[in-house]
Length: 184
Image 1 (cartoon, rainbow, N blue to C red):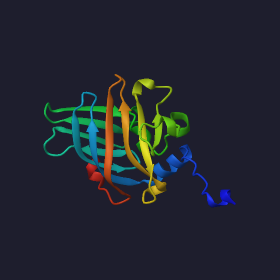
Image 2 (image 1 turned 30 degrees about the vertical axis):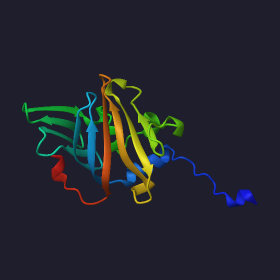
Image 3 (image 1 turned 180 degrees about the horizontal axis):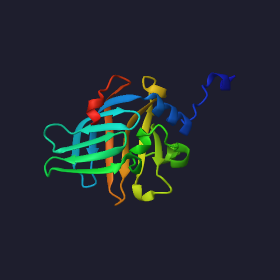
Image 4 (image 1 turned 180 degrees about the vertical axis):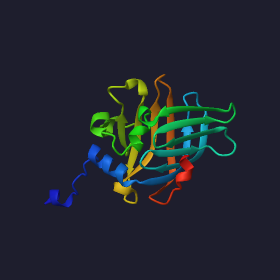
């Protein structure tokens, strides 16, 4: 009788649930806070449009802009008038943006005991054929208001030089119109 009164424990989301939540998120806007390996903190707004598009706008006070147009990820440094570009699939963010990414080949859900953020699902992704591309550990939290029931809350990207960049998202809005011109 006691067992009937105790609610069954919910299983932690698996990789299939993560894929469904990512696929259900066609657009997203959020505020972000980014902490670089050297401790530098930057804030701004993020706009995402699947497939393949993301923009990190650091605001008027920053000389930087990061934009993915669906094919390549561009880092713009207005201070020195330089643009650096990489194929999007060659970056850790490609896992989040490419609806054709084979997460079963690239990623794994960490056991709850290994998640650095208690109560959040931690997904570690790295292309085993190209570890030089870096890796991403991204986080989702259960949220009935988010597409697929999981809300993307941030990530930790380790680049080829083993430098860590931490991104945290807040004030997220899902599946609302986002202009394509943001990604040009």
